[in-house]
Length: 285
Ligand code: CAA
Ligand code: NAD
Image (cartoon, rainbow, N blue to C red):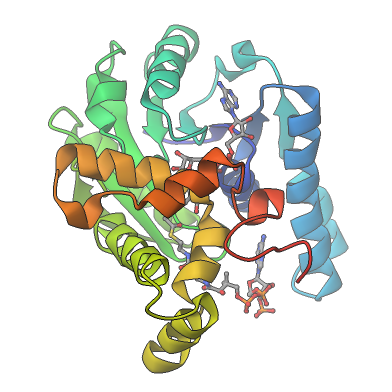
């Protein structure tokens, strides 16, 4: 099917980046948030990115105008009725995602595709509350969504070939390289990446090295652009904890168990870059 109109649910770190590239790539794009303050924040992030790209001479003023014309925020889910594709990017919580998919299924035209940007939760559990299981899949972007080149298409036991092919074309139209993963916790990348970040926390918890030295080790020793603690702060400690819990629930092996320190940091309200406090005190940096 041809996708022309896109809806993005959630205007946080990921939703705003996904909405940005969707509008940039020619799609009429609406982004939904839960309240005006968060909506304004998300919309400002998208507009800010275009101003930054214009400031760097990467896009023209005309392009900024064009992109802005194709993008708007809303607080009303009913505006998603005519969308061809809806990308869910809300908090990593299965109950909330299932309840949202139920409402999306009742609102959005029946032929539309509904996809989740979840880091690790089972897509089939979201598909199961809809009457269109074949048109539900995972479409997993990487942070920062406008920059990272990969998109995982997550195929459930019900997702049709047509859905996978439409998503493959859509991902390519955004300038991304798609890979197809089965609907197992963590898909391809997070199944490898999350235990790596959890191991770094355990090393630090056990006093084997400082955060800074672990980060420097992985950056200079392996050529990674960020060390594990910088990446944890960047991804979000809450998101990492919920993703680890989801993977551990499916693979109850200590490798995937969230370390106590990660839990305590999230319980204390340290979420990383998104609120300025994480493994590093980002406000002071
Ligand atoms: N739109 C378009 N371009 C943007 C942009 C935006 N919103 N934001 C930044 N850019 C561009 C910048 O213009 C810049 O381009 P130039 O180099 O051509 O000027 C480029 O992106 C890099 O930006 P910066 O110079 O600000 O930053 P940097 O060079 O320090 O790189 C980084 C930042 C790309 C994040 C890099 O540090 C990196 O790759 N880090 C690792 C990120 C990573 O591993 N992400 C995956 C996380 S896991 C995940 O996402 C899955 C999950 O489910 C949890
Ligand atoms: P975030 O906390 O930055 O943003 C989530 C946003 O969703 C919030 O602004 C919240 O107000 C909004 N929201 C919650 N319920 C909503 C609803 N019912 N309707 C509309 N908006 C709602 O989180 P994030 O980091 O953007 O993560 C979003 C999703 O993307 C999660 O499933 C996460 O696992 C996944 N993901 C995150 C990353 C990452 O690096 N942070 C990378 C890939 C995938």
